[in-house]
Length: 172
Image (cartoon, rainbow, N blue to C red; front, top):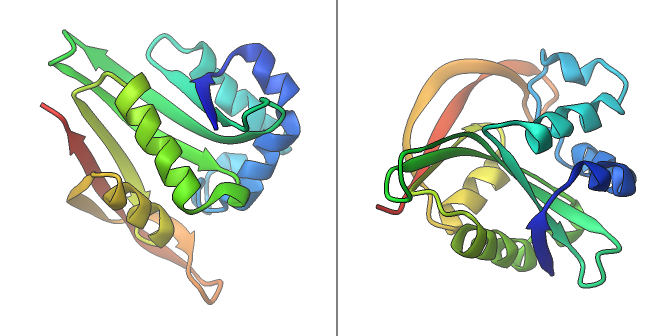
């Protein structure tokens, strides 16, 4: 796998791969998020805001020939006084085709080699159990939660308010 920073040009080149990732990761948006109701091409605009933002960066996970884009790691709300005093929020979006050990190794490489921030944090709905397991496996610790924060569908398809879990990776 190859991990590298995503460019605006990549959004067009890997359009279908990105749209497939959104399909594979249905819990990226809560049930009332406006992006659930718009044309799916708006998902690319959503990612472009992170690619072009002043306080964000997007790293892609590609196959060895860079024919396919399998995942995105979005670093947002970047705050930095120095390398020892820095923080970023992490979001991920991944194709089901690399779920498992390959994905975990790619995320670990990105965190070790490309992400210099001392503190990383993420918010994960309680309903997204695989995402919670993944972040715990790569070293994040649950530090809290926001009760009944967002509406998500449960396993029976019922929309219920879900807790939003807060995970932190503190490398100081």
